[in-house]
Image (cartoon, rainbow, N blue to C red):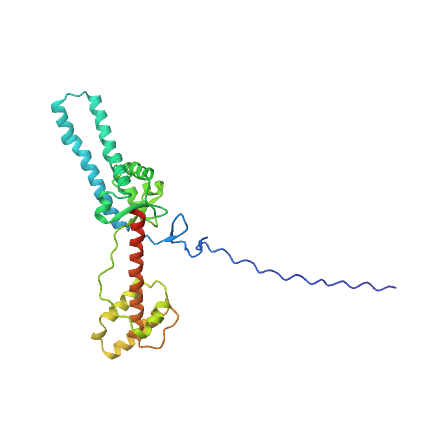
Length: 292
């Protein structure tokens, strides 16, 4: 009786590791995050949108001008015309409609087109309307914003615009959503503040360190500690300084060379100020290049 042939053991090919899951927060452009503003050439731009308060003040100014022009017609211009020329009711209604279209749509469209995104309210508040690529708006976009702005701002007193801007990351009103635009801060200045000197022995480390954004409470606490350092007792200086360093090291890499806490915090604050100043200067230069 013959023996059964043994089964041949064929080694399995090594399994390839599964690709990591795609993180929706990552962008398809190298070095560009989800929250970056990206131009048509895939260049990340740091043009911050205007906050809701500035947009509200700017909108109130523009709507006030629109109502003033609307009332001017019926309170002064039309009665003056009737004193010199007797017009029938149909012709007066036609002129009134034409004036309303010019005052509420035509004039805002013309002003934003000629100024490349500025209305009177924008000019007073230091704002500018740009397209979603952070470039100058087109005439079509200005017309879309003006057209939607009539039902959005006048009959409903701007409530739809306020609600839309409050729930939108870039504070867009309905006209911006339709036109593909948003409003940026056109005037940004480096805040006047007491400069913190960079400790020379930590300058090289600070320049190469990775400084992640800190919570406002921590950043303000560090600056307040440095500004009032001389008024603290030695014990408070040491304990509070070490506590702030421990908190700050969560957002700074790599660790600093051995140094006193006050000097480490001074290096962090001075480097953050230097980088903020460079970023603001870069934004202003970019805006000047975009808008002439």
